[in-house]
Length: 41
Picture 1 (tube, rainbow, N blue to C red):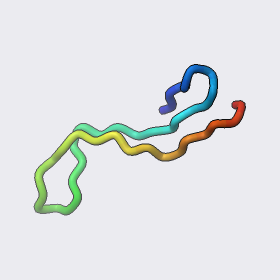
Picture 2 (picture 1 turned 90 degrees about the vertical axis):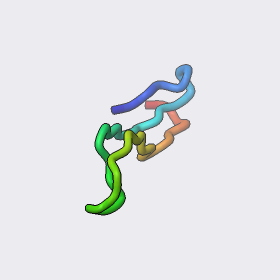
Picture 3 (picture 1 turned 135 degrees about the vertical axis):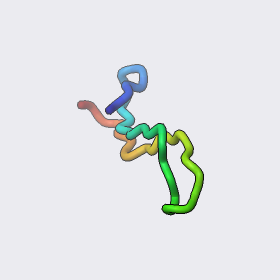
Picture 4 (picture 1 turned 180 degrees about the horizontal axis):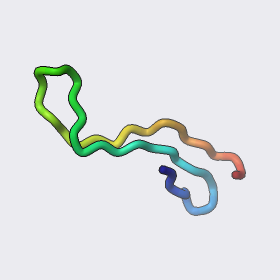
């Protein structure tokens, strides 16, 4: 997915309702930012 930044750039991200850091850990909701692009697209 991506989000426009007022026409000045773009943020690509992933969202997860059930992210775990290890098999034994609790699940959490997270948004992971993959890239931030300030150039034209």
